[in-house]
Image 1: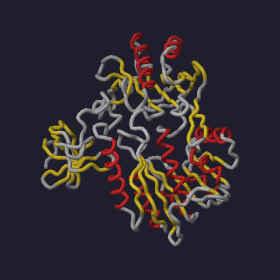
Image 2: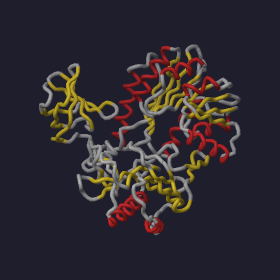
Image 3: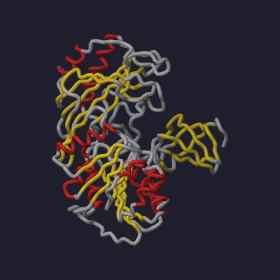
Length: 463
């Protein structure tokens, strides 16, 4: 096997997140965006320690498990989804195997793996989308949508996206047509020039309330009144409750606010989850699949078990969703989150739901937990994709609680943290995968860990 050479091969399996494995001359080559059973033409780009990394040039033969035709017309060119050429049952089977193999690689004791729970909706499930302005080819017409697969610059207009409902596509088309007609420039990241950056759309799946936010630089001043009127005149299933204009002059390709102006209505919308109501602002963290989040949090609540008269720490608490789900039956719940806006939203939502035994603290878990006087009876962990800082994990372990529930959005980070937790006296009792992102490579995992010597009872009910 040589770098730069082109080979044919069969994809033998796909490891998390989307790493297809091909054997070439008794050596493994990893290629992205492959499906098990495909025959592909690929080039070898890197060779490290006898293992190669490659890029698919052409799919010579489809996999036996592939669909004849993906539902989404953008699939393949758009980089948003990876598995829409598989049936949902095949997607779940793949993610279940990937999570189980990762867990088995580090878990040292017997545990119960409970498979995978699917999303209630395979399509139209997202309550938030961040679309980008750009062009699909250099100097081409204005595009609005997602990054082209494998590209940092090219943007594919996704006006028939299938993981959002049709309101999003109508809004996208309206905004794109408006700026195309006026020949307004998009922000060129390399040149650092231009006006249009992103379009953020959020919609409550339970409330049908829509919040629309146009993100631009401050390099131009545009009268956006006609755009507001065009959006208000759309025939939508949902109700537009707010149209915003956010100024973002950051050099980084991120959606953030230097200033946000309300063009119409309000700068928030409401969503409901497991009987609770949540007020959500444009940049608040909230699970992007509301119905899937109910599955995830009901699972976590089952794993947590009986918490009557107990103090709970909800670490990396975001907008406090888990804390508020637990609060009605707990003695006290303390949430810690580094994003101050999320903490403020958590406090607002706790008042909205008439919950008085929740406390939310803004700060880094590593630094904050030393200053908390309360001691937890149980800890819930829901960290970002990178997992938990090793020093923070040691402080968490030092509390010596009998049970830990770990909710992970990236199983490779989870297994790294599990190694440390097991070394320090915890063992995995139950685990399950939860699919929140149908069509994509992402998957959530919920783990119940028990401190060695503490006998937990499976199937405890919250109460």
